[in-house]
Amino acid sequence: VINRWAWEEKSTTNRREWEPTAFVQEGETLPAYYSGTDPVFFLDTFKSKIAYKGEFETIEEFAKRTANKDDLLSPINTSDLYAFRMNDIDIKYDADAQVYLIRYRCGKSYPWESLSKTDGWPACKVASVHRDDDTYVASNAFGASRVVKRTRGIDFALAIVDSNPWLSNEYKYRRISVPLEKARDLKDKELAVLFVGRVIEAKLFTKRSERIEPTIDSPRDLSIREEAVPFGLEKVFFYVLQTGEILWQYPSKVQGAGQIKGGLPEKAVVNKNVFTNVLIANIKQNLTNKSTANSVQDISSKCSAFGSFANTVMEGRQANTLLSDGLKLLDDIKVKDPVLGSVMEDIIMLAYQQPSYQTLEDKARAAVEFKNATILGCTQSEKKK
Figure 1 (cartoon, rainbow, N blue to C red):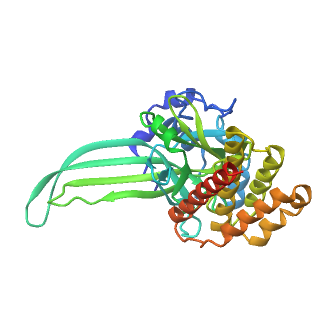
Figure 2 (cartoon, rainbow, N blue to C red):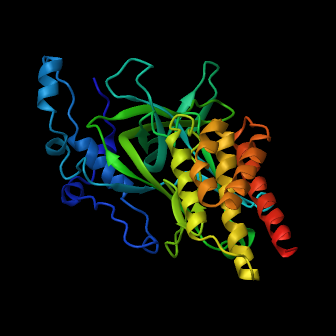
Figure 3 (cartoon, one colour):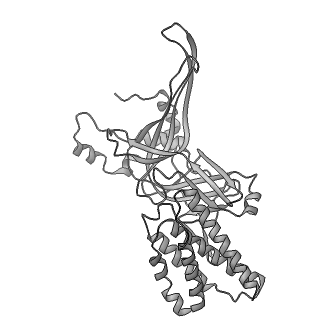
């Protein structure tokens, strides 16, 4: 017997009237104070639509009955993009490394009807959507009694397929490079993370995310269940809530003049084409925007482009991409511009002389330090000319 919680039947009228709004990005920023889809209404609507296999229903019959996911889930559908602001995260700035460290809460979640521990998907918490508090009196075998504060709750999460290059069960934080002066300008702003993707299954994933048993010394009774919607993650935004300014986004986007916003996903080893595509884009930008560097502005532009290239190369190095893969991409460059090709080859060779680190923090730090060293060396060299 499935134990339905009392509040799950509340606000039925409001839920029937609610429809989610599809995510559409217009321009280079998000709307000011944009928080995406309402997590409470979305989860309640989704749960009211999904079907469960009947006791006297065969697997084949159930599959046929639920084959059309869009009809089953309407007004939610599998073709629209939906955006969710990830509320349960920590964002801190490291002034020395000039990076924001973003930590978010993820862990394995499992289909409601599954008894197998191999069916779990990584699930990232979006928000706490329901809490129900009360008290009761409890006593132990020795007659001591306490008033116990009880909390029952539900958290909403996104269950993300394991093969997604952005995320796995072990990958729980991201380092994002932002210059110190920019970060200082943002210190009084609220920064946020947005996950954007599509619903891909009409089933619910669940797990118990928190449990505290009451004791005499600590009369607290807490039980929180996580409920996750199967989600195909396609985009991630790190942005300023008040203005909608996008500080970083995944997938990485070439911003011009060889500058790349963001970096490689930690799971770049799984999809090696990510490194190749970013590297090619960076090379093309360097060829297109190459300057003679005969002024302070030219020097800054040229060295910033090389710095971005160096950052990309070191991220590839830390992702254990083969050295030969990077060098092969320079063949055409060397023919068209031997000087530029030689400089870029030197950057790649220097990157691969550095060690490949184990932790995410060390990997990110290596990329930032290599980028800064490249810009410094380039600037000093150009000023001597």
